[in-house]
Image (cartoon, rainbow, N blue to C red; front, side, top):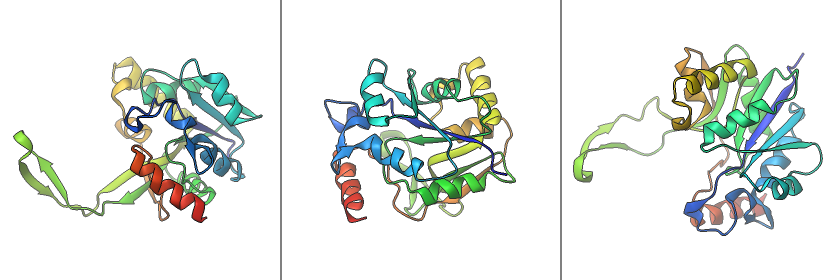
Length: 226
């Protein structure tokens, strides 16, 4: 029987690089706030029973209007990982799995969400990822190339990322105790540091992260073509 799953949508980023006047998750994208696209995909996935949205502090009300009935909205922390911590604290009792997703990835599909949740079976976690496609260079002083990194076996981590809730909570608490939580860029790295096994699930459809205005244009093109 599937384990009860709570989804944490991290929507607390300011979106400084977007140059927007509102937080990135509330920016209009193809006629809707960016956050709304991720929530639609999550709600279309029958495996997700509860949704927690982590909002920019002070904007919980605006985010709640977008999130709609049934979603829990909490204020985020000073960093992404600290925002995930706040989402975990708001998880409903009895949840067995937690799926963490960034609102800045509005192209996520129900199929990818389900594949990542399925990937947790037989592992401690699973993440959406894409094989490295570009040649990778290691930079040295002054921007000079120090070497070329073989891309074979290298993957770019994305979200959603899913874990047994107790596993992620343990990893977050350990990092916080050691003063390392704020520096973490994704949940998987915290879990890996605890010696746990995380599976890569290939993201075959576009699942880009909207970071710049150019990214927003590309995301809108994909969304309007669906």
